[in-house]
Length: 129
Image 1 (cartoon, rainbow, N blue to C red):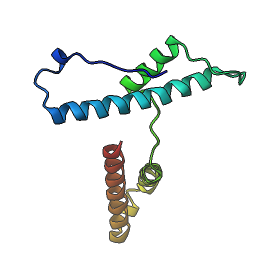
Image 2 (image 1 turned 60 degrees about the horizontal axis):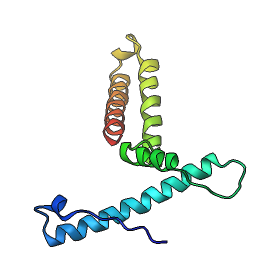
Image 3 (image 1 turned 30 degrees about the horizontal axis):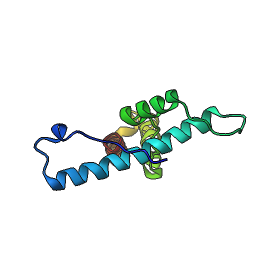
Image 4 (image 1 turned 30 degrees about the vertical axis):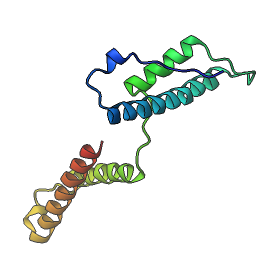
């Protein structure tokens, strides 16, 4: 059984022929993604491993997930490393703070360098999120 989706021409007022072609591709792509997500929802709920049965509610749930972007996003490994470096650098700034040792120029330079690394890594990790 083939499922066909029909869009009324009145809804496509102002669409050029290339725009209609792109709309068809985008709707097809969304349909494929929705089917995948619906199958994922069904497999998550079908713990017994029996015959798959997709219900209207599962399709609605999958559509909600697709529309609202509820799916978990995989975080890049470098972003995780950057977050760890920024946390360790911030901790190091706190540990290094000592008014008496700040009188030494080399120690003060190292302290400022650690602060700079902390600021840069926190800023980059925040922007990448």
